[in-house]
Image (cartoon, rainbow, N blue to C red):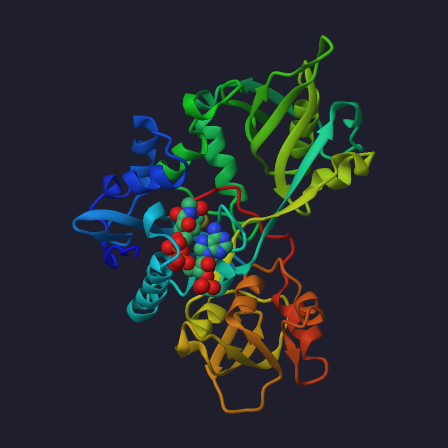
Length: 410
Ligand SMILES: CC(C)(COP(=O)(O)OP(=O)(O)OC[C@H]1O[C@@H](n2cnc3c(N)ncnc32)[C@H](O)[C@@H]1OP(=O)(O)O)[C@@H](O)C(=O)NCCC(=O)NCCS
């Protein structure tokens, strides 16, 4: 009979090095470079992050980051979960479950961030823990022959190209201006900013180094794109792929100028990018079908404390609604809440009043960044309407324009 190893004990990590053996094994046994580990260590928060150990050896890992994320209503503290890994011989016996529940309960007990978020290697894992799909990316592949864009008002922009190291100040200035525009975006300190331009040679594969285009208006940086080229030839015809890591612009003319420059890179056959689902370029293409956007899940969001989380965000309309919430993993959320919203935000209090909507914490997580339609969830049978009109009214209040987007994997 197989003897199972002892159940691991979960405790705070001492340092990033604690995680390394299991992280490397979990993602396929690749040894990473010293530069990779130095970057991971630079954002690592040992006191908050967890390891599961037996006999002094790490068997499971979970990094917890103190993020400042734009939500509907402005920047807010959100706990980010990353590097959730379990050693192969300890899998499917609840180690990850124990770590995730420890994080959620610790956040609740300590009154820290009321919301947790993660991006995941496999989209089917975290719904069972009450994480709802809150933002999506549209993967676009624009062929060079379809590069014609509609005219944009706002004048000409100069576009300069170089290595990202030449444009650090421009990248920081533009990002700081754009970060508040969409829910899901993360503010960056120096360590996170350095990761945005991290260009590890052992991660490049067949691609060239990271490059940067900067758009300028009146001599000031007004947009930038980080991208790289991958060489490809078809019957001696160059069909390079231009793959965009980030593109931000302070104004429409700068965004359009960057897209024009990317779509006009010599030797290129196509431009590929993960973009917000409502990216302006989709409206600018004269041949909109050519971009062939494909949706992919991005941020999965968990309301740790429903009342604090709903008071933390802003709303697009005034509502007065009673939510009957189901949340077996975080039983403090399993009750009815009265949510009243106005221009200043929301007030969310426990109530004994009759419910208007019945839903799970997972659905509230999906709604939190304003990118998921409550009407869609109700039509899917995931939200129950107990008072006629409650779905439509709440759907308007929870939605946010523009759509959420998070270009960072943490
Ligand atoms: C994903 C991983 C962390 C799961 O660890 P684990 O300890 O085996 O997970 P648990 O035993 O706690 O599983 C908890 C639940 O998640 C489910 N689950 C685990 N891995 C899953 C997967 N890859 N896909 C779908 N469901 C999964 C389990 O079936 C279990 O479901 P149940 O609660 O309904 O019974 C582990 O397989 C791993 O390290 N994978 C490689 C790295 C990775 O992809 N990490 C995710 C990064 S976000």
